[in-house]
Image 1 (cartoon, rainbow, N blue to C red):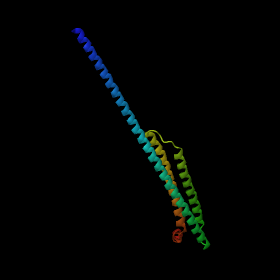
Image 2 (image 1 turned 90 degrees about the vertical axis):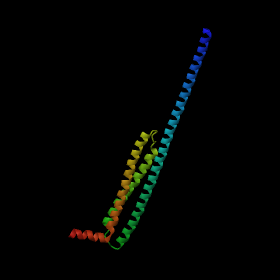
Image 3 (image 1 turned 135 degrees about the horizontal axis):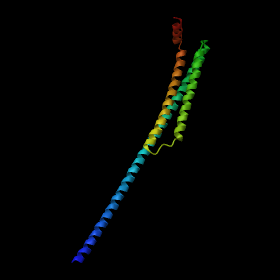
Image 4 (image 1 turned 30 degrees about the vertical axis):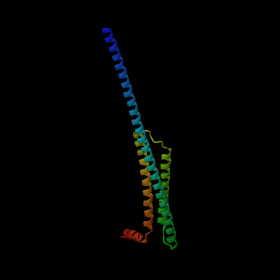
Length: 178
């Protein structure tokens, strides 16, 4: 009887050992699939962020191009106004100088928009969210620079227009006399 018991117990032990190995393999397989799915979700999230960042930058570049085009059209209209005023023998030297400065600022803004576009087209966005954050900070700084250049160009055009207004010129001259 003892021989039969030992052979049965050894068979049971082998079965238990096989069941443990099978369960360990199944658990390891589940862990691997979970790791893969988590990594896949992370990569999908990074890809979506890259896509949104690219769309954002392209949208901003489009807005900045439109703004600089509008500023150029305004400069042309102001220039034609200066020519008309000059034809009436009114002094517009200051306005012409201010317009030249404004055109330089508009060109600076256009160049900065082009630089932003070339920088983002050359940039390969990172593969992790932390690298993407750093890339976005760089782009954000450039966007702020472009925005400030456009604001300066607009302010320069406003100065040109205000120098052309005859009432303002009279007020400036009367303030100087008083």
